[in-house]
Amino acid sequence: MRKVLVANRSEIALRVIRTCRELELATVAVYSDADRDALHVREADEAVSIGKPHARESYLNVDKLIAAARETGADAIHPGYGFLSESARFAEACAAAEVAFVGPSAEAIAAMGDKAAARRLAREAGVPVVPGTDASTDADAALRGADEVGYPVMVKAAAGGGGRGIRVAADADDLRGLVGDAAREAEAAFGDGSLYVEKLLERARHVEIQVVGDRHGKVLHLHERECSLQRRRQKLVEESPSPALGPSTREAMAQAAVRLAEAVGYTSAGTVEFLVDEDERFYFIEMNTRLQVEHGVTEMVTGTDLVREQLLVAAGEPLELSQDDVRPNGTSIEFRINAEDPERDFQPAPGRIEGVELPGGPGVRVDTAIYPGYTVPPFYDSLIAKLLVWAPTREQALRRGRRALEELRIEGVETTVPLHLRLVEDERVAAGDFHTGYLEQLLASTSEVGGAA
Amino acid sequence: MADRRTIKSPMPGTFYRRPSPDEDPFANEGDRVSNGDVVGLVEVMKSFNEIKSDQDGVIETFLVENEDAVEAGQDLVALGDR
Image 1: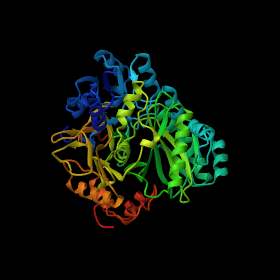
Image 2 (image 1 turned 45 degrees about the horizontal axis):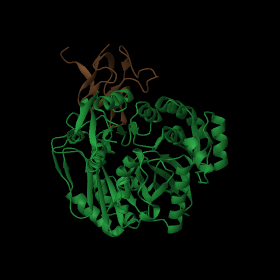
Image 3 (image 1 turned 30 degrees about the vertical axis):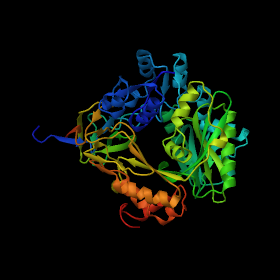
Image 4 (image 1 turned 90 degrees about the vertical axis):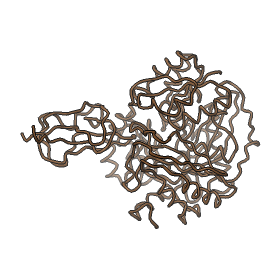
């Protein structure tokens, strides 16, 4: 492996380019017409224009990306996250073009991409799943399944994932009313109208296990990330370790994640997501077959570079790490800085960045691709920066987080910084006493995000 | 034409005339719309926002094509009285 094309944009493209440089790999950026002035384009050794702003015509265009790899002689493609990172078709196209796809096999992506089939695989690997049904487009089957597990239930698109394509039904009437729409919506959004039903676990935490596997049969885990602070099923704050789990639960979850990864022959970095109830019973929800947005918190507590591991694995090398080498230390917390206005129901707020001052000092990492004068385009995700902190204890990490958030200045667009400043002061956040519904409850309880509770 | 009435986009993004690719457009030229009727969607950062008419009228013409990039404040639809 000598030259890596990064099939992504913004902070994750830059993050991948940085590790490539450290490994002395040449880099190729790709960019849409909206990203001509983007930092990832400047920082790569070469850059290829791939089309119009709309992702379908650029970052999601398999043919253009493969052509860009051919044209530049890139022998590997790193997909980042989002876009084509979980596309089995893209992984296959890379293989056909004899370019290494920096991710798992197309088979593993496909196996985990069908979220209902993934539940079956998990059960077969002895991993507990949320009580529910297998995929079906049949409303009667959904109703029978829901009766069995008890209401309320979630109706999920089998081809969905990442919090998309989910509806909640309070009772049978509700379910009868929404099944048809949900199937049509899933068909339109994902090209597959199959649905499955899961019991809605209230007051559950979202905890996920980072795994990494090589092409020589080794799979190991890098412990957990707690991601329960969410709004509309999108994570806003992640941390490692989880402030709530006991050591035996933690270990059992990690072992379950490794068993599932082994069962699908997993060969890259991946994440196995679980819900954990108030009695610390855990249930598999889905596996993300890619690098995760919040991978940095794992890197900070384990001292690893997950992109480096991905690249080495994709080059066919065995993992240098052993499970005993992975010894988490301290606490890391990530705050997602989105171009959204918390005062206006988190309405997306693209626009020109007039000024930026980034925090620094001990235990602070900022992954971002914004700069003064940069215009955040309206076509892509609202994530513009990830602020990560590390400290020996969770209490210190929260204080460091507050300090770094106060140092961070972004002028020109509204951001989620005021919300984070409130969260680091919140008593229940400080106590680690929260679940996936907590943040929305907190937002509903006051109208002004930046104000005191 | 002195006081041409329009429906504007409140935000930058991508304009869509249909709720999804397989469905009929929200509204067509010649349709009568009332205050609050949805005439399209603007997608900004993966979130879809309904564009509603802020007045009564008849759609004379769409000033942008389906999937065009639009700016905040840009005219999307020209309205007539009949």
